[in-house]
Image 1 (cartoon, rainbow, N blue to C red):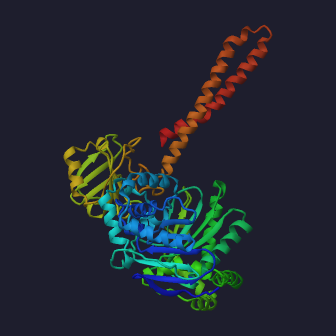
Image 2: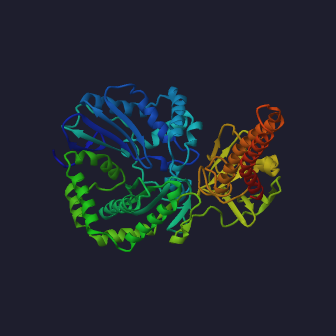
Image 3: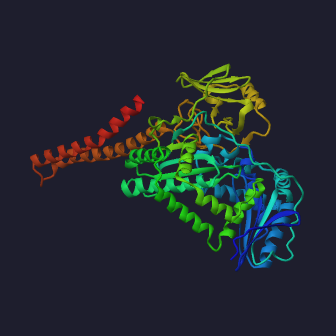
Length: 576
């Protein structure tokens, strides 16, 4: 099978072709994704993708779509005439989306979202914009209007913003891509919410996760492979701390790539996994890169490049490169770079990765001892303006100024300037959640701070157009207490309590209440049993006075033991 990728054109759409036998495989790729959206409009690209595929119905051949950070793919595998019919249907639907299906597809997307695990790292690295939006719910889907969806499709899903790839014995006969004209879109802007790196934040209980942004090179790909081997050797084979220790390499198609590494851990092994993980990174930074590891990773990579279907596997990535104005490299170029990489070049990548590293430590753990800086959960300033004290008299206050809103507690503050508000979530009970582009949240609760209607209207009027998100009623209203966040959910910072993963203090309080409820209930039931035996057991003719007294004492002692944990938790909760 030929390993070459040939460049051609299909009705104005750049086309990449690779010879392959068997079923025809093809994909239509557009330069648009989640990172091109706004937080308030998040999910509209995914919605267009779903609508464009609806008319395909149920088919015997395989087809699907995928919305990524910067690209949207429509791919198909089947007989030649099936592939032609699929691509024609996608193009026809993009030109005339089935809006009668809009509300149904919205429900499907919400169901899909409920099952999707959204990673935290993009939010902490990029903020609530651009590449960071993959950490957030698709809030824009709920309120997307037909005209909004049509406009998005007409703007981004165009002939000049697309690349077709085909793998088969020939280009399918009769293939015509009827897409509207439009310019090639640049790659999304790269933002940053990290003032310093390497940085860390604490969240979750599943293990240790890290990512780093490095130049997209063959040496960087090999570094990711060497890192995985070192993590597996240290944390699984030698230490026995982790079951899974793995890494991933994902080109961003703008000249940079993200190296991600993960090691799982049981709660009792989290300290050991975190320490071992950091030690592996430190070893690579120190240049301890074994030639045998590099050769093993290089051998696997070369086997992938020279596999019979290697050219076909490279087609989707080559299409993304072309859309990003990057020339796809040939097989000979890739293999030449692969075999030229030295341990010194991998070491250079390790040093580069250190300068951009972002580590997610398990909740309750820190990494400052390893030279990582805590990612910010507070703002550096508070706005000046009208101050609203919390009705709970706990020292928390909301400050509404002409430039933004701040939530303060003691000497800490979280601030969302109006000009940098990515979205404002509005609830039917009058509450607002302002989310800044840096990921910081401020909860504005009129009832908790005694905010008058005029002030609320002033806040709404000052926010940028297109940032409002109307949400359904909440099950409960959030506590207004400002506190440091242990992890971002839909936002981060002291004001982001509602709707996010609870911080360490919240988790501790919830656990204390659970213990209090369980042991309190058991103690109550057992004490009732002891009381009944004390009162009625004495009259049992088959029981002596000594036996009755001993058993009654035993029952009351057990009740006291059950009550003791509940008493300790109750005292600790009041102190906290």
